[in-house]
Image 1: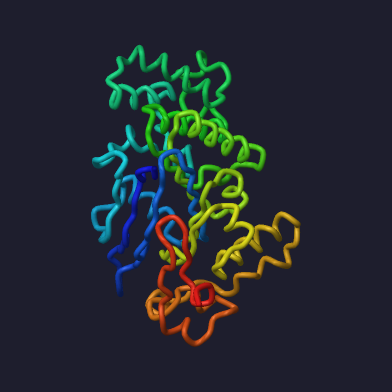
Image 2: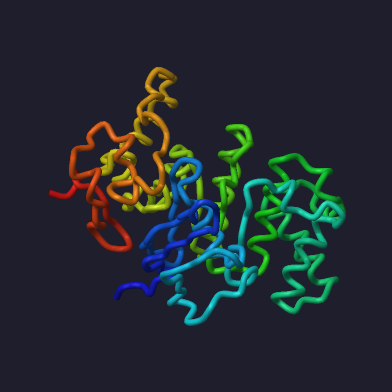
Length: 314
């Protein structure tokens, strides 16, 4: 018996008003996330990863023009942010309130979404701080965020995100700006918490090393378009799209210390209107041919696995 998807995106497109023409941030994204599954979105800056995350979290600005659907079949209703969906942002120093103690910020979630009293919420905050690895939580629960290190602040942000026991945890570059050791600790913490709570995880990153550590599946975005999706092991070992292949090659070069290989993805993204006439990646693709520049490749696959490339699909 197949599981009912927790999250289902169908033809999701997002545009933002701009001059001289609207900016297309997402274009026809089709994705699925099952309960307890860990999906990682990868792609360079400007690929639409964060826009996709913010749409799922219900935090897009009012002026955003959205078409397609974002559904939660396993919930059977629209999710309640904070209760059904937790969010961990990239910079905890700006996402945490500087004038409230960390205990108050964790407790607020429990008071709002679990009808806890403030005294019970404070006790629960101590437990949550201990779960995410903050030392001496009984003493630190009343400290403001600036008294914690960067890695500790990210742990506190995670504690806030999981406080109400969400079904889905969204994480937007949660290890950006942290050193390698702390990055690994945060990823292991996220992995352990979602497994413990039975939650699904949707994590955004530009770092394939991060994806390889935590992902069940990987989805690759380029210029707002989903170009490849599939099991993490397959994407990392045998990518089918040239852009995915370039990202994997760069990650391997960095791991091996071969800086000369970092020019694998040449040039920079082309004009959006030009990309709309064909494959968005064609201006940068070493394998592009005439068809790539005039015909947009169709998605071959389903919401769980597939590719959009004329070379990959005969």
